[in-house]
Length: 324
Image 1 (cartoon, one colour):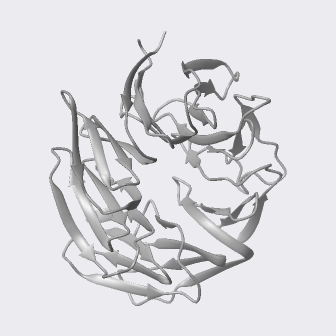
Image 2 (image 1 turned 30 degrees about the horizontal axis):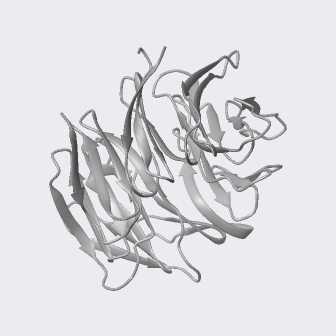
């Protein structure tokens, strides 16, 4: 039976991450907590809006209401990477070769490891950011589509159009597809080789969370009373194919999904604080955490896929050990 080590904090959990195998919990008040031989914490921002681990999973990249972009190491050392004055840094992304992307208002920025900073202006606000898995490409979700920038060169950006407000963004692990979450209850995708559109609609709520399976053959999403898992094995992605529905519950919505690092399994967090794991092959479910006080807002597996860190909007956080 899985065991839960709880950590009750005061505030909304924005993100959880494993840095050097230590679970970190980033809260909206700007404090990042960690379970490292006891409960430790460091105040990184005056108001935290976005956080993600770097590609090596040794530091947490964060952006805040104080206009700062920070890197927090696993030992609690916080380093300022950039500052843009009295503007909010609303999203961050970790890129190759130590590059960091961040956005504020209509601007997207790429900070290279050598300190160079590139700026990219958009007609409307830059929302989600994602780096391609290979090469130096930054995708920006924006109003009426997405823009692909090539920060290392002076190459012209590629515009991918689709009407509506696009919020979150992600490349498939093989780099062949780009998928956005939308302000409406839908996902949109592009096959990058030919610009073909993929429309993934029919959700009862907004999709706030998505996660690719270990080999990139599946995309798990929130926004329904089950985890909706789209197949991406075919050359045109999920077009004409029905998604899997995992962990269906009649009375509460899925708010977070996180695919296992090795197996075709997803951790599924719900609006009532429950967390399940479900296997794609046979839809078998394991209860990882009973319902709590608030919606699950963050999930992250450790590298081995044996422990799952979770955070909720009420500050209820913790670590589930799958092996018990």
